[in-house]
Image 1 (tube, rainbow, N blue to C red):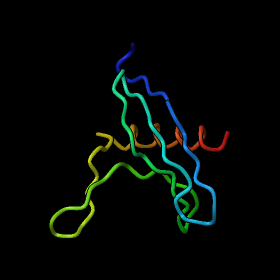
Image 2: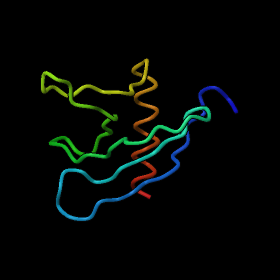
Image 3: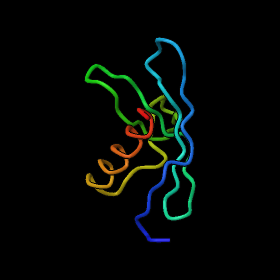
Length: 84
């Protein structure tokens, strides 16, 4: 498998008027990352990375793309799969 191969392995859509629209799992070069979220924000749909709450009460991403280009590629792929 190519190093930068990204595939959406699962899209679980959430019904209702909530901001959270879906949970998404992706496969990155054979490693599955679970817990990405499609969120409806004030500027439209966007991809939110998996995160955890620290002891200070703030939220921290547990998985994040190393570059802006990788974030955009991942976001475009996931949002396209969500809208299918």
